[in-house]
Amino acid sequence: MSTDEDATRAQFHPRGTSNSNIRGNVYDRRKRRQWMLDAFGNGKTCPCHWCKRRLRKPQADRYPRCGHMGGRYTRDNIVPSCADCNVRRCGPGGSKCQVWRDAHGTYGR
Image (cartoon, rainbow, N blue to C red):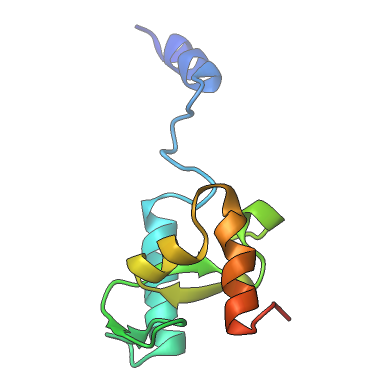
């Protein structure tokens, strides 16, 4: 296959060639995780925003604007979260998000 054919195939591939999605590629996610460890913790661990458990590998939780509310993975819209809190707080469909915020008295900036 020639380089022109490779370029055409890559251009029209439905998934793309960057192995990236809304969260970014692996490098972006690694940088974001290290930024959270540095900004919210001591560089090696940080507390979960919700339950305060110490984390070595935090997940990025979009807060105050969740994904279903149009929130993006930007530094002013993410907080570190453990997997349990991240799933419990904003489950599929996002209906749990508002219930969680009402119960805990937190609602964005």
